[in-house]
Image (cartoon, rainbow, N blue to C red; front, top):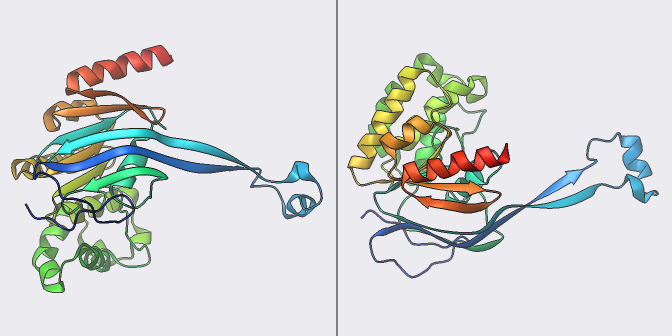
Length: 267
Protein backbone atom coordinates (compact mmCIF):
# COMPACT_ATOMS: atom_id res chain seq x y z
CA UNK A 1 0.00 0.00 0.00
CA UNK A 2 1.20 3.48 -0.85
CA UNK A 3 0.81 5.25 2.46
CA UNK A 4 1.66 8.52 4.08
CA UNK A 5 1.89 8.98 7.82
CA UNK A 6 -1.29 8.05 9.64
CA UNK A 7 -2.94 11.08 11.22
CA UNK A 8 -5.99 11.74 13.36
CA UNK A 9 -8.43 14.61 12.75
CA UNK A 10 -6.11 17.06 14.47
CA UNK A 11 -3.04 16.04 12.48
CA UNK A 12 -1.50 13.95 15.27
CA UNK A 13 0.24 10.66 14.56
CA UNK A 14 -1.72 7.58 15.59
CA UNK A 15 -1.06 3.86 15.68
CA UNK A 16 -1.04 2.25 12.22
CA UNK A 17 -3.89 -0.02 11.27
CA UNK A 18 -4.01 -3.67 10.28
CA UNK A 19 -3.46 -2.97 6.58
CA UNK A 20 -7.12 -3.38 5.60
CA UNK A 21 -8.71 -0.15 6.82
CA UNK A 22 -8.66 3.00 4.67
CA UNK A 23 -10.66 5.35 6.93
CA UNK A 24 -11.81 5.14 10.52
CA UNK A 25 -14.09 7.76 12.05
CA UNK A 26 -14.85 7.72 15.77
CA UNK A 27 -17.50 9.80 17.57
CA UNK A 28 -17.20 12.69 15.11
CA UNK A 29 -18.98 15.97 15.84
CA UNK A 30 -18.97 19.16 13.77
CA UNK A 31 -20.56 22.47 14.75
CA UNK A 32 -21.23 25.62 12.77
CA UNK A 33 -22.28 29.02 14.09
CA UNK A 34 -25.23 30.62 12.32
CA UNK A 35 -25.25 34.41 12.61
CA UNK A 36 -28.56 36.24 12.50
CA UNK A 37 -29.24 39.92 11.79
CA UNK A 38 -25.93 40.19 9.95
CA UNK A 39 -27.39 42.15 7.01
CA UNK A 40 -28.62 45.20 8.88
CA UNK A 41 -27.42 48.61 7.78
CA UNK A 42 -24.42 50.37 9.29
CA UNK A 43 -26.86 52.60 11.19
CA UNK A 44 -28.56 49.60 12.82
CA UNK A 45 -25.20 48.08 13.68
CA UNK A 46 -24.19 51.37 15.29
CA UNK A 47 -27.41 51.49 17.29
CA UNK A 48 -26.72 47.96 18.37
CA UNK A 49 -23.87 49.25 20.47
CA UNK A 50 -26.46 50.93 22.68
CA UNK A 51 -29.57 48.81 22.20
CA UNK A 52 -29.38 45.12 22.97
CA UNK A 53 -32.26 44.22 20.67
CA UNK A 54 -30.16 45.20 17.62
CA UNK A 55 -27.20 43.00 18.47
CA UNK A 56 -26.32 40.10 16.27
CA UNK A 57 -27.43 36.67 17.48
CA UNK A 58 -25.45 33.46 17.06
CA UNK A 59 -27.01 30.02 16.93
CA UNK A 60 -25.20 26.68 17.15
CA UNK A 61 -25.89 24.13 14.43
CA UNK A 62 -24.48 20.64 14.81
CA UNK A 63 -23.98 19.35 11.27
CA UNK A 64 -22.60 16.00 12.48
CA UNK A 65 -23.42 14.26 15.76
CA UNK A 66 -21.38 11.29 16.90
CA UNK A 67 -20.51 9.75 13.53
CA UNK A 68 -18.80 6.34 13.63
CA UNK A 69 -17.63 4.88 10.34
CA UNK A 70 -15.07 2.38 9.11
CA UNK A 71 -14.22 2.00 5.43
CA UNK A 72 -12.00 -0.78 4.16
CA UNK A 73 -9.40 -0.46 1.41
CA UNK A 74 -10.97 -0.98 -2.01
CA UNK A 75 -14.50 -0.18 -0.84
CA UNK A 76 -16.79 2.16 -2.77
CA UNK A 77 -19.14 3.86 -0.32
CA UNK A 78 -21.96 6.27 -1.15
CA UNK A 79 -23.03 8.92 1.35
CA UNK A 80 -26.68 9.68 0.69
CA UNK A 81 -29.45 11.59 2.38
CA UNK A 82 -31.58 14.73 2.13
CA UNK A 83 -30.09 18.19 1.75
CA UNK A 84 -28.57 19.37 5.01
CA UNK A 85 -28.05 15.85 6.33
CA UNK A 86 -24.28 16.34 6.77
CA UNK A 87 -22.95 14.42 3.76
CA UNK A 88 -20.70 17.10 2.30
CA UNK A 89 -19.59 18.18 5.77
CA UNK A 90 -18.37 14.64 6.42
CA UNK A 91 -16.59 14.60 3.05
CA UNK A 92 -14.85 17.90 3.81
CA UNK A 93 -13.72 16.58 7.17
CA UNK A 94 -12.25 13.50 5.49
CA UNK A 95 -10.43 15.82 3.08
CA UNK A 96 -9.13 17.82 6.09
CA UNK A 97 -10.49 21.08 4.72
CA UNK A 98 -12.59 21.28 7.89
CA UNK A 99 -11.63 20.36 11.44
CA UNK A 100 -13.97 18.51 13.80
CA UNK A 101 -15.09 19.85 17.13
CA UNK A 102 -14.88 16.41 18.71
CA UNK A 103 -13.85 12.91 17.66
CA UNK A 104 -11.14 11.31 15.56
CA UNK A 105 -10.56 10.72 11.86
CA UNK A 106 -7.86 8.24 10.95
CA UNK A 107 -6.74 8.16 7.32
CA UNK A 108 -4.53 5.37 6.02
CA UNK A 109 -3.16 6.44 2.65
CA UNK A 110 -3.03 9.49 0.41
CA UNK A 111 -6.26 11.38 -0.24
CA UNK A 112 -6.86 13.25 -3.49
CA UNK A 113 -8.58 16.67 -3.46
CA UNK A 114 -12.37 16.41 -3.52
CA UNK A 115 -13.19 15.65 -7.16
CA UNK A 116 -15.73 17.62 -9.14
CA UNK A 117 -15.84 20.96 -7.30
CA UNK A 118 -12.40 22.46 -7.86
CA UNK A 119 -11.66 22.68 -4.16
CA UNK A 120 -8.17 24.10 -3.69
CA UNK A 121 -8.16 25.98 -6.99
CA UNK A 122 -6.85 29.54 -6.95
CA UNK A 123 -9.31 31.37 -9.19
CA UNK A 124 -6.83 34.05 -10.24
CA UNK A 125 -4.52 31.36 -11.67
CA UNK A 126 -4.99 29.62 -14.99
CA UNK A 127 -6.12 26.03 -15.28
CA UNK A 128 -2.55 25.01 -16.12
CA UNK A 129 -1.14 26.81 -13.10
CA UNK A 130 -3.74 25.17 -10.87
CA UNK A 131 -2.77 21.73 -12.14
CA UNK A 132 0.83 22.31 -11.11
CA UNK A 133 -0.23 23.91 -7.83
CA UNK A 134 -2.44 20.95 -6.88
CA UNK A 135 0.24 18.49 -7.91
CA UNK A 136 2.77 20.28 -5.72
CA UNK A 137 0.41 20.31 -2.73
CA UNK A 138 -0.18 16.60 -3.24
CA UNK A 139 3.57 16.04 -3.10
CA UNK A 140 4.46 15.57 -6.75
CA UNK A 141 7.58 17.04 -8.32
CA UNK A 142 7.31 19.26 -11.39
CA UNK A 143 8.62 16.39 -13.51
CA UNK A 144 5.89 14.11 -12.15
CA UNK A 145 3.20 16.69 -12.95
CA UNK A 146 4.75 17.12 -16.41
CA UNK A 147 4.22 13.39 -17.00
CA UNK A 148 0.46 13.57 -16.34
CA UNK A 149 -0.28 17.11 -17.52
CA UNK A 150 -1.32 16.20 -21.08
CA UNK A 151 -3.58 13.38 -19.83
CA UNK A 152 -5.31 15.80 -17.43
CA UNK A 153 -5.86 18.42 -20.14
CA UNK A 154 -7.10 15.84 -22.66
CA UNK A 155 -9.55 14.48 -20.09
CA UNK A 156 -11.04 17.92 -19.40
CA UNK A 157 -11.74 18.63 -23.10
CA UNK A 158 -11.59 22.37 -22.37
CA UNK A 159 -8.90 23.05 -24.98
CA UNK A 160 -7.23 26.45 -24.95
CA UNK A 161 -9.19 27.46 -21.85
CA UNK A 162 -6.51 25.66 -19.87
CA UNK A 163 -4.50 28.90 -20.21
CA UNK A 164 -7.39 31.09 -18.99
CA UNK A 165 -7.83 32.07 -15.31
CA UNK A 166 -10.21 29.72 -13.52
CA UNK A 167 -12.35 32.69 -12.43
CA UNK A 168 -13.56 32.85 -16.04
CA UNK A 169 -14.58 29.17 -16.17
CA UNK A 170 -18.15 27.96 -16.11
CA UNK A 171 -19.22 25.67 -13.28
CA UNK A 172 -18.99 22.71 -15.64
CA UNK A 173 -15.44 23.58 -16.68
CA UNK A 174 -14.34 23.86 -13.05
CA UNK A 175 -15.92 20.45 -12.39
CA UNK A 176 -14.13 18.90 -15.36
CA UNK A 177 -10.76 20.26 -14.29
CA UNK A 178 -11.33 19.34 -10.64
CA UNK A 179 -12.24 15.76 -11.48
CA UNK A 180 -9.42 15.36 -13.98
CA UNK A 181 -6.79 16.55 -11.51
CA UNK A 182 -8.09 14.32 -8.70
CA UNK A 183 -8.21 11.08 -10.70
CA UNK A 184 -4.75 11.54 -12.21
CA UNK A 185 -2.89 12.00 -8.91
CA UNK A 186 -2.74 8.26 -8.16
CA UNK A 187 -4.16 8.68 -4.66
CA UNK A 188 -5.22 5.80 -2.42
CA UNK A 189 -8.55 7.43 -1.56
CA UNK A 190 -10.77 9.43 -3.89
CA UNK A 191 -13.49 11.73 -2.51
CA UNK A 192 -16.26 12.73 -4.90
CA UNK A 193 -18.96 15.36 -4.37
CA UNK A 194 -21.87 15.30 -6.82
CA UNK A 195 -19.72 14.58 -9.87
CA UNK A 196 -22.83 13.43 -11.76
CA UNK A 197 -24.68 16.72 -11.28
CA UNK A 198 -22.44 18.85 -13.50
CA UNK A 199 -21.45 18.27 -17.09
CA UNK A 200 -23.08 16.60 -20.06
CA UNK A 201 -23.83 12.89 -20.47
CA UNK A 202 -20.59 12.31 -22.36
CA UNK A 203 -18.45 13.70 -19.55
CA UNK A 204 -20.45 11.83 -16.91
CA UNK A 205 -19.79 8.58 -18.75
CA UNK A 206 -16.07 9.40 -18.81
CA UNK A 207 -16.20 9.99 -15.06
CA UNK A 208 -17.96 6.68 -14.45
CA UNK A 209 -15.44 4.77 -16.58
CA UNK A 210 -12.50 6.34 -14.77
CA UNK A 211 -14.01 5.59 -11.36
CA UNK A 212 -14.57 1.97 -12.35
CA UNK A 213 -10.90 1.76 -13.40
CA UNK A 214 -9.95 3.32 -10.06
CA UNK A 215 -11.89 0.60 -8.25
CA UNK A 216 -10.29 -2.21 -10.26
CA UNK A 217 -6.92 -1.00 -9.03
CA UNK A 218 -8.03 -1.58 -5.44
CA UNK A 219 -8.49 2.09 -4.59
CA UNK A 220 -11.08 3.46 -2.16
CA UNK A 221 -14.00 5.69 -3.20
CA UNK A 222 -16.28 7.81 -1.02
CA UNK A 223 -19.05 9.38 -3.05
CA UNK A 224 -21.68 11.99 -2.18
CA UNK A 225 -24.46 11.92 -4.75
CA UNK A 226 -28.18 12.11 -5.41
CA UNK A 227 -27.76 10.06 -8.62
CA UNK A 228 -29.32 6.82 -7.39
CA UNK A 229 -28.90 5.07 -10.73
CA UNK A 230 -25.12 5.35 -10.45
CA UNK A 231 -24.90 3.80 -7.00
CA UNK A 232 -25.71 0.24 -8.04
CA UNK A 233 -23.07 0.36 -10.76
CA UNK A 234 -20.29 1.91 -8.72
CA UNK A 235 -20.87 1.32 -5.00
CA UNK A 236 -21.17 -1.81 -2.90
CA UNK A 237 -22.19 0.04 0.26
CA UNK A 238 -24.18 3.11 1.21
CA UNK A 239 -24.57 5.20 4.35
CA UNK A 240 -27.77 7.17 4.87
CA UNK A 241 -27.37 10.39 6.84
CA UNK A 242 -30.21 12.32 8.41
CA UNK A 243 -29.89 15.33 10.70
CA UNK A 244 -26.18 14.76 11.16
CA UNK A 245 -26.34 11.06 12.04
CA UNK A 246 -25.92 7.79 10.16
CA UNK A 247 -29.33 6.12 10.32
CA UNK A 248 -28.69 3.24 7.90
CA UNK A 249 -25.49 1.58 6.70
CA UNK A 250 -25.04 -1.46 4.47
CA UNK A 251 -26.14 -2.89 1.13
CA UNK A 252 -26.98 -0.20 -1.43
CA UNK A 253 -30.48 -1.51 -2.22
CA UNK A 254 -31.41 -1.77 1.46
CA UNK A 255 -30.13 1.72 2.27
CA UNK A 256 -31.91 3.21 -0.76
CA UNK A 257 -35.12 1.58 0.46
CA UNK A 258 -34.54 3.13 3.89
CA UNK A 259 -33.98 6.48 2.19
CA UNK A 260 -37.30 6.16 0.37
CA UNK A 261 -39.05 5.45 3.68
CA UNK A 262 -37.32 8.43 5.28
CA UNK A 263 -38.44 10.83 2.55
CA UNK A 264 -41.97 9.38 2.56
CA UNK A 265 -42.25 9.93 6.31
CA UNK A 266 -40.87 13.44 5.99
CA UNK A 267 -43.53 14.23 3.42
